[in-house]
Amino acid sequence: MALIRKKKSKETPPVSTASLPDIVFMLLFFFMVTTTMREVTLLVRLKKPKATEMQKLDRKDLTTYIYMGSPKNPETYGSEPRIQLDDQLGDIGDIQSFVILKREEINEAERPKFTVSIKADIDVKMGLISDLKQELRKAQALKISYSTNPAASPEELYKTY
Amino acid sequence: MGRKKRSTPEINAGSMADIAFLLLIFFLVTTTMDVDKGLMVKLAPWTDEPPPEDNKIKEKNIFVVLVNSNDQLLVEDDYLSIDQLRGSAKDFINNNGDGTCAECNGLRSPVSSDNPQKAIISLQNDRGTSYQMFVKVRNEILGAYSELRNELSERKYGRSFPTLNEEDRSVIVGIYPQFISEAEPVSVGE
Image 1: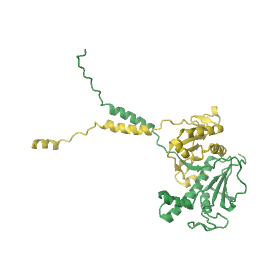
Image 2: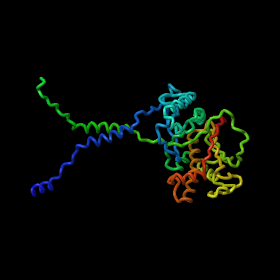
Image 3: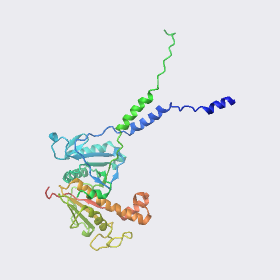
Image 4: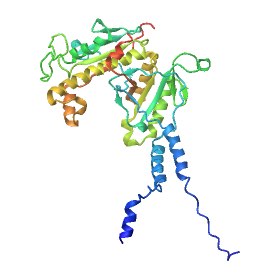
């Protein structure tokens, strides 16, 4: 009896690594679930403006993105700012049907929370943005967000002028 | 044949962790955790008929911000730079000309807004205005409101506006509601 006890106190048992695969799998599943593989390949140059008063858009599934900027390959698409809807460049006339289609995809109870996020380049002129806004109004997509990057302070925004 | 008992060999699970790690690292690298942030705006519903001409909004209750195609500001018939806009907008919203807003501490000028409930900021830009400038102006106007709400919240509850609970927050929003109108752009020349 005494002999057994003595033996136990001397040896430290090795850490069991049997559960390591389980832990790793758990992490793996977490990242698999949170990963969004389907990212749109940008066909337009996009440098978002900076701002300080923004709000977070937390429901990605209720948000539709519309990109605007000068095309990356001007040989094919010209140098004038264009609108990108999903993976192709569209015209102002395509917006209504695009937005309505996107809204149909989400379930009816959450449709009032449907938001359109406008990701536009800083050099886009407001004429194009206004045309877009008119189309969104016609499509009854009234919640919009001007996508911006965070600025460190309001003073940073004054500097360039 | 049938009599021969073959024990199936056990699959070696030792490399399971390595495989899982490999997958884990792949998903770690490809995951984008970025959250989209932006200036939230509510558009007015589309109407085919033009707005009524005889609207009863007094001119002193409208704070007109004009941006031209050279990204210059004209605020209430004065040239302003972008860093003056926030202060100017705050003075206008907080003016409290008719004294009905008990919580406001404005200048009570007779030529500026009656009270924050009536104060409307009208933002009008040219078709040639840059998006960058538009976002800056929009940001300053939103900033004016959020500063006023924050100041009131500090005076009233001793805490900043974002930390308030739902109920207190709606009280503050009731005192300083946001009325921003984005008018149709005019084309003066690009």
